[in-house]
Amino acid sequence: MNNSPSFAVPLADLSVLRASGADAAAFLHGQLTQDITGLPPGQARLAGYCTPKGRLLGTLVIWRDPAQTEDFVALVKADIAQALAKRLSMFILRAKAKLTVEPIAVWGVQLAAGQQAASLPFAPPADDAPFSVAQTDQGTWIAAPRAEAGPRRWWLLDGRNLPAEDSDASRLAAWQAADIAAGLPWIQAATQDVFIPQTLNLDLIEGVNFTKGCYPGQEVVARSHYRGTIKRRMAYGIAQPGGPADSLAGSDIFDAARPESPSGRVVNAASGDGETHLLLEVHLADLGTAEYRLGSIQGPHIGIQPLPYHIDSVEAG
Image (tube, rainbow, N blue to C red):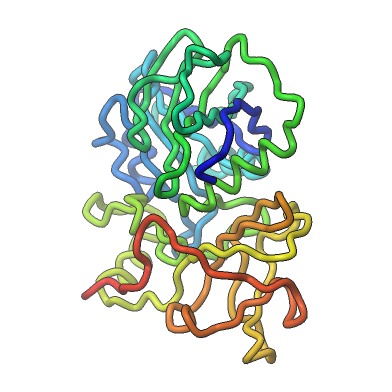
């Protein structure tokens, strides 16, 4: 990944969700795992939306609209965007808030190490601190998290005057693989109502605020945190040989030494260059000893890779 080229690619798998109105901040604050009312301008945050049982129905990258500061804008997986907007809208009641899925293009922009933006058809902002937000003539830029020593990356909304790349499929796979290497989980249709925030490491990457007050599932999430009962975490693995990744989310993984039942589950997947990058929900106790296989005990071997943050410790009560 360190030698990855510069590119801009349309991210058709992501949609833009907008919350508008005078009560948008207060409404979202009472629904998401993140402190929305305290979200400063120029900063995005990761957030989760849970069922009352604490299971994630969506993960979002959310920020205040630089042009309309009452509004909040979020990136979500496209296959859950409409359902998420509909469900959240059910709880608006008398609040002055409205949720819509916006027809705005989302691009992934990657700038290789040493590459000068002046020679390219895109000009990202100088600030590449993860989740920083900036507005330019080309649209809204949100700096994406990256693996250690990985290329600089931004989500770009609108992307005026950007030409589509000829190799969109490979560029999209490379972008998704970089999300995985950064340890950034996306809930999609196949994994809704399956994971609690901590098993996807949201608490380790500032996607859960434990002091903000109530939201759906808050009691379950807080209990797991304060009792230190997190036994499953999300890890990064690479399966070889690789294969199609489109249908892997939610599928089982196995430990060849214990073939009688699945030992984990795929969260996200991206394939390219003969290998498949995976985010996996696994038992913490198995890491370092399990011989993971994808799909069955005869499936491709999964080698566990380092994440840019530590997952080998459980919260103390």
